[in-house]
Amino acid sequence: MRAVAMNSSTMKKIILSTMLAAVLACAACALSACSGSAADSAASQPTTRTITDAIGRTVEVPTDVHTAAIDGFATRMVVYAGAADKLVGVADIDKTDAVAMPYQYTNKDAFDSLPSSSAGGAKNTAYEEEIIQLAPDVIISTETDASVNDDLQEKTGVPVVVVTQSDVFGDATYASLSLLGQIFGTSDHTDQVVAALKGWQQDLADRTKDIPDASKPTCYSGAVSFKGAHGFEGTYANYMPFVAIGAKNVVDETGQNGALIIDLEKVAVWNPDYIFLNPQNMNLVNQSYASNPDFYNELKAVQSGNVYSQPSFNYNGTNMELAVADAYYAGKVLYPQKFADVDMDKQADEIFQTMLGTTYMQQLKDAGLGFNKLTIGA
Image (cartoon, rainbow, N blue to C red; front, side):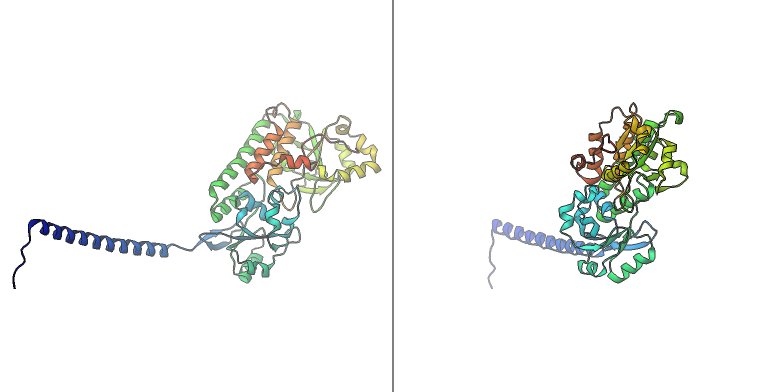
């Protein structure tokens, strides 16, 4: 056999080709190893995580939560958490178009199109079959009985996470908002909401902390809504907007806490300097006035024109944005010098924008629920 002679140029080409083939082979091997490593890494990522809900239950939820259904009045909290778009089922009451429920009214078109996963309201019940069909990643509940939640979770096969709104300004409420942020991946948003709530709480307290009790006027909040509408006699002890600004609520003298019905004669004895009424229930107040005008006309707040609106924040639970706005308005009325820099419309819309993602003052005004003076019997 005869050897084939190669010139130096041919030899260089062969060597370069061999080296290139070797490099490509190594790269292919490395890429294959990398792909395998990435696949192995992805496969090793946990698909669930364990959280502790508002009543201390340990619940295993998906790592990535894309959908949720509501049991009770938790829809509001999901809206505050910036996760309304995750909802696939809401409560029946969340489809009641009511301006006095800002979280609902700002999302009414979306909520009206969703199936009902519970009844909501005082007689709430979960719709188990509907939830099973919806197959959400989680159920967000306000039911405080652990056994009821455990039963719902077992029957539907869906993790049930309980949240709470024990106070507008309270650690339990802040913790529930933060928990929802972790579950839905909206922690940046919930951190901002919690920080804003704490900031408003501090601002309200700071504005009034140096006012001596002896210099504070007395006040009364009536026509509040709780378990339905009430007239002048419907009131609150430890009324959150008054508590936030350190106001002298005459009803606190009863030693009670929360909503109650008060005897009109007791109000006459107290004869508060200022009266705040829920404009939504003024029809009931005016009916009472028509049958007993002397009672109202003898109140010094009525005589001096110191009767003001206070939109009810209690509607299917506590509408936190309204409660905070009410506190600022009560502050402007009772302590005008301390709140002189507060433009009520701008302050309220700042609160609404933070909590709801939109302004809302104009909607309240259009519905007759703005912040202004009221005339009893008009």
